[in-house]
Length: 310
Length: 246
Picture 1 (spheres, rainbow over the protein chains, first blue to last red):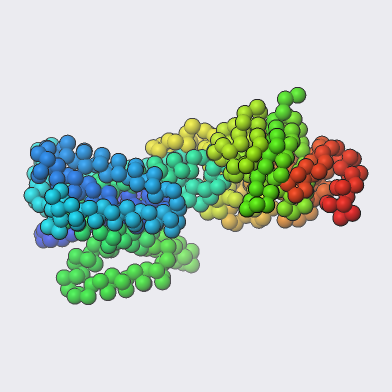
Picture 2 (picture 1 turned 180 degrees about the vertical axis):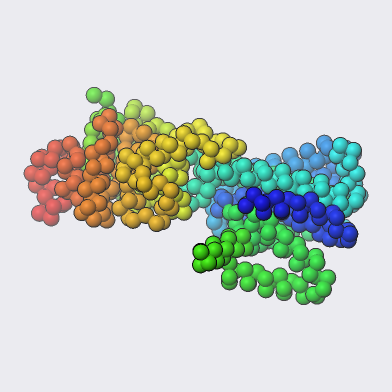
């Protein structure tokens, strides 16, 4: 286990050695999607709350950081912090509304809130640029490092993704994380045991929103451009697919799911015109053979194999 | 002696049908009280009102002198009220120890800790093992609940309640569905509950229930029909009529 983690770490660090910058950029996109999916997995997998509006936090942060630096005249650091605060605050408010329900009710409220933001981005042209979006964002220079090259930006993204991964890992293994999963499995019993189920869920909702905001910052820096598409329902659905395909409620699942979707979307689509069909076929296969997701599915297959060979 | 539980004029109506219709009831500290009554008498509703899962339409519920009627359910555990469920409500994917740790966390300020690893809090796991030992499940602490026989699941329910060291324990049919042998084990578990803990128990099995409780309250259509010692209850003509089938 420790050995495979070391190998994975070495592979991740070696990515910029690939001579083709295109693939380095694909790897950066995978990491950004992984941050996005990791944050949503807190809700979907660990809290058992399926959200169809997670693009709201990515989109809000991406729009906010772009607007604040290009129109608001702020420096990169204050703009990034403000954008992150804004998406976190939005999650705090949206959480109060969405957590009036669970299950389908929760899903519909998150969907509706996401659609409202998408509508605002699309229609409020003077603020958001409407269909044209906002352009002109430059990449920041943290500690004086130039992030213009694909390799440098990849390392920056990798550092942020590792940080998010670490925060999520700490959270889900903590006492509060145990309460989150308990509230997913037996909310009524959790209340009787003295746990404030609503507050536990709300804290998780806010943390997931903050994680979505981090993904939004990376997304904006990567593309240096933001358009209403990031807030669209397809964006929320795609990240939900990443979580479910990879394995909801596992640490690595969202990362694997993000890699699957992004590679299909970018690399394979260059060779296969009907890549969306291929994406669909891949998901059908996953659902048929590993309904719990790739990571738990492979782990299960591994266990059965080692048991039968022993 | 002070009362652990004091209920006055309690009413709860479901869609025009009163489930609890003016119940007044007092249970002294350290008492073992049995709640009897046919199906639909309102026994479990009464528990849900005490723990705040339901809000009463009228009346007051005092637990150790504190008004709890209509309060939030999560407050109950912090006031020293523990309960078990008639329909088993455990965390099936988790191990027995993890189930008990969730109970311990519920009354510990640690439950808000988002950073340190739960695994590393040895104190919780030791206490969980202790409690599981008290109900005879120490050997199975690391097994997942879904592998557990039904009777053991009932005892885990009790262990989770006991882990919180409640002062008032509400047991909802702890013997339901148990075999003769499992009943004996359960009786031993209940007998070992510390004397100072007040116990209010719903149970249909007259033999085990009558040997456990000092006083009995009979509920019928949401009303208290009679309250008294075993002898008084068994001799009461209305009880014989409605509960023992005449």
